[in-house]
Length: 115
Length: 113
Image (cartoon, rainbow over all chains, first blue to last red; front, side):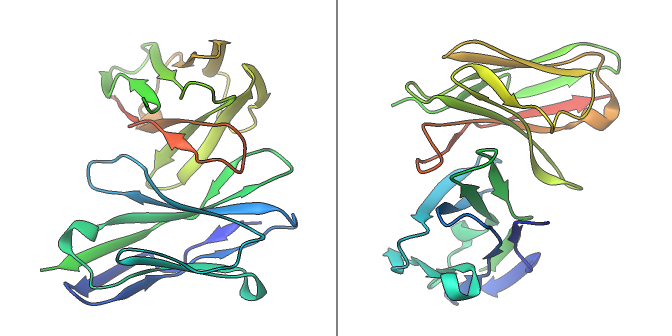
């Protein structure tokens, strides 16, 4: 069963628009960790955020914010006032405390910010 | 602090040749992972080590692939013989535990002609 689902394959927005990237996860563990990574055109994977399953507080970091809702198994990512430099592929990922100690990635959402 | 270091950054080789990818994890991290990224399959785990011991290699596609971790600061992923379908970006990652931040290397872009 797929553990992380990013239903949006590609999104295009005009600069300064807000955009939300969706992430739905599946796990039987009560302790788990959720991540977002950014992959710019240069190809590296850039860590953005990590949340554990016991902390449902939303987090804001500059123009970035994350909404974690256990009730819907979602960990959505919002970029406010998008900029061209935000253009990248964004991956949501899940790590479970038990099991294979793997980082399960979603298929990614390609965000294009049009100037 | 140095991040995960991978080499080479790019590798172009001919079908049938041996390819060796290298990785130096973040100092102090006890888990090391090799991932492969392709358009068709996305990011998939090939193998992971914990305290230098291979724990799960179920993602290794076939016997042509092998990985070693002789010590806590070095790992290799070898493909022998290489095939065009092995062309992909190979990432190495390390972590202290699932709760920690996973560091990723810059990846090795492998092209097998």
